[in-house]
Length: 566
Image 1 (cartoon, rainbow, N blue to C red):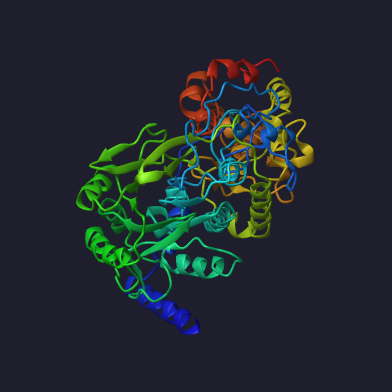
Image 2 (cartoon, rainbow, N blue to C red):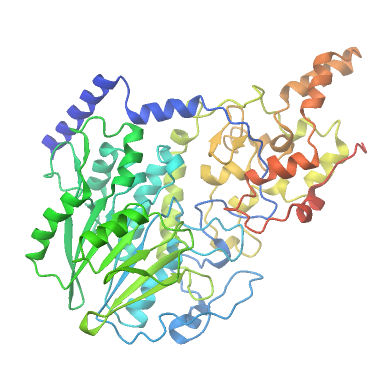
């Protein structure tokens, strides 16, 4: 292993010498200089933010929710959020008598370890997925395995320090759920071979870890002898022997090439997928599997073309399907094409029955049929603990960006002396207490709440001075309660812009009585019209991801402070 690590460092050093800077360094520098012309406003609903646990239905770690007895396996519905209304549910896997084996497929999570939680009925998340798999294994006694087709991180933020931490914990989540393979896709490869090799070394030492990276046409450091990624594997699911091959498609390779990661093939090489499949199929057939599966991190057209070229596969799982894919599969010949969707909202279960009959069901991970698995709550706590430990590496001056205006933040207390009316309305709004939902949770959830105060992906919409779409802190924005308590919550400047210069100019005007052009211009620049708020401001946090049912007119009434009444 020491020789391999030395080899890895040598290759990386060669790459740096040839290119002057690594891809990761280039991406970091790009973020530092990024100018973003967005003003933020946090969510009116007290909610968690992207990638944090959906707390309205989360039991305490290690405890089983009493309503879990109403799970689908007993024919009832599960609902646990305060104010939630249980809905009539579709029977889970209706008509499936005990299959010989069940394969669960997922992919394109794009960073959603859990749904954001802003809308009470958002589907998805590892916690519900784990309960689904538990129901199949424990309640029904079925033989189950699971595989992911890749794309588990957010492409825009894949090089952020937090993404590597999340990647590690998502792999541990796969382990807890009994997954047996992850096809490395676009986002995984964007981490770079160094990060992937180091992560493989770290997780492979975990007790019982059995989630290898798959990639028949992917080679790190010019050799296939490193142990990762593996070309294929055969797993025993009950009495069924399943052979699985994973590939990165040409459609994905084109995107990888744009990053420059494949410029040096001695570091990362991606071969033509069909050639790799053809070679690996011969080796795999020698093991006499009952069922052959292809995990294709490709677009749909390429996945279907591969299914046509290699009819030996009875299942081809494709990446890049619709967010909410079709409920019924399509076929190329006799090959089932499985669309898993995006953001972890759904998984697909494929059952193998007598005479090689396959049954398919797209399973929406809703809150009515699935409980929150305590093991996943524990995983979320571990994740947040690591974020706290490594917070300074994620939120610091090197990674912060300058505000497009070039100005700095002052805090709401600097506004209240002159804008008494507006300040009073704001101070009684949920905006003012947005940080509370990260520290305490919603009313009634305090006892089981996992504190997210160190999670940048949450802070971006619950504090002042962040660019929420990019999850980047402005240089003078909120850093922590210890360093910048005056910027806690969603304050005036998230909507009107940073106002430290404006405060200084107004204080000078009070002393001298001289109304300067700079003061007049400062006042104009901080004005915000209702139409501008609706079109350009609110949706930076109240976007489709966080507030799919956001009604501007409804919530504007709760925060409106227009008209000078001081």
